[in-house]
Length: 283
Image 1 (cartoon, helix red, strand yellow):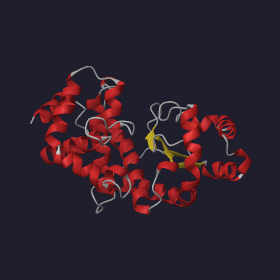
Image 2: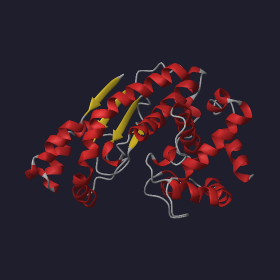
Image 3: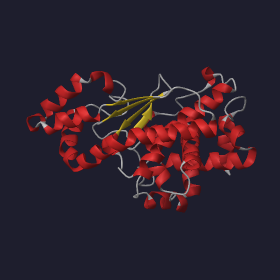
Image 4: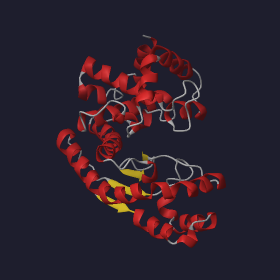
């Protein structure tokens, strides 16, 4: 396991007050281009508007950023060990910790399914919250690893379709519940204490959420749909973003009940995942 913690370098930059400007932030990002290459523009647009907005937010998050810099490495070690013991996770993981500009909070890179980024300015500093988001991202790697061990043909996966994302985000959330059990339900989706209205919206509108996602899934899948269901920038349908996470978790949990955990996590290997998902959405 490797952890590259770039948070102290950002704190040193920010604490030099003369650098707290658009030009200063641009200079810092350019100096650390390698660490941000996977962050911009896929997980956060690098625009003047975005950077100026971030400049106004950093001061309010500094205490949390410092706390996370100190606590997250040990949490990543803890959760990596949990997955190794419970799910026989054998791959070598690489973690990159950075301060971003308030885009995505964490992600597994597209080209390297063993490399996980955490943009900590968006995270809660509470230990259990950090454990859950770490478990979610390591859950993605574990999900891919279990399928690989069973001979998964990755060339057959339609990574650009929302039904695939529904399954993968549902599996990662399911795994986070198994490895960090006993927390309030919303924490597994928002990684903080602010998710009650979000989960309540889903529970009260579940049938309509399923119907609306089915409608989108049957048409051509576009980036606008991906953002609506799985990105922080979505939420126009029901007033809450990333409802696809809750929908996907419901699907995976019922799949586990139906065929067992290992078979559910590897269901996309040798089965028609899209067909099964569409049938479930119609129920």
